[in-house]
Length: 479
Image (cartoon, rainbow, N blue to C red):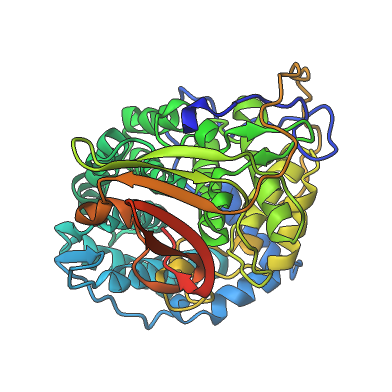
């Protein structure tokens, strides 16, 4: 099972690196929470504005990408709903929510760069409209994805206009604490009444992102600490040692969801990077936690998606509902790669490690260069997979290298887990009895066609055994 998989840590921080270099986070972990302090600090926003005014590259290309997006226009009008549904069997309307949140975020970011008040006013109007109407999130298990993704995104958009005179800060706090956060926190506690390994890492990571963003926005230190503790030590697959269960001698950390498909692996890396960045801006270094384990996982996924050959140690996890059906699933090799598949996730990660910390991150850097200039919601297709990240990393996260990074003592070498052999690609699952009656637990976000994740076909075989085989039959919703 997943927890039985080796958790050894290699000595190097990344491919071909030796000693690490460390820049200090924004503040001390016990200090008052910083605002703005989610994905962007005041220094970040000032840097973007100054660089664009100076005509500096690649900031100008990043800002042009933002200005061209239809969501970043001051004419955008919100369409708030009292109840938002996501998941099969419900009257889905969640697209309205994610489009409006991305419009609020993009208008707010455009205001900070351009200084034009109309964009701030538009962002405030959108956010106030939703905080004044939305009362709950409903649907299948996918409602937890909606809470996590759109909760952390709403908080980030709101953080950028929290000092605007017309922004209803109190109502935004209530929306996060009463609608988004409860579902995300409950998922981390009970996992929709499923066994803890039933859900792949991205489910936990959406919830961690929402809990962390809510804690920061609402100045709830205990909520922040809850998210940080789960990132480090949580039982679910989204905690860092379960998402990256094997670290090899070459410094690559095997991202477990690479055994599922490329789209979900990219989603997971993007979400974990988002969590690390928000924590960093509050003085909490998750980027460097456990000998920079996240970098090793990001390097692995970047190399794989760039077409490189990567190892994968077979991973078996339990599935099922507590008190209901149960089974197991084994991922035995990495999934196929579509070279054209991308997400706006790499600039943030590459700039942290190479500029803030001054360490090489060769594959992540190449992935960032390939994706530049990064866009945002609306630039990667109309379906929800294209809105899982807020994006615009070329504009927002490009930074100058830290002048004098401090090098800590090198971490001692640890035993490397996993064999060097590359197993056969494929996933097999055994279940008894059939999970059909618990589809809400088993399907977990795979109902809709979308241009991100390569789908896995499912064929029933006599005796109650399921064989999940990869087929090029289209792509499905990230989550």
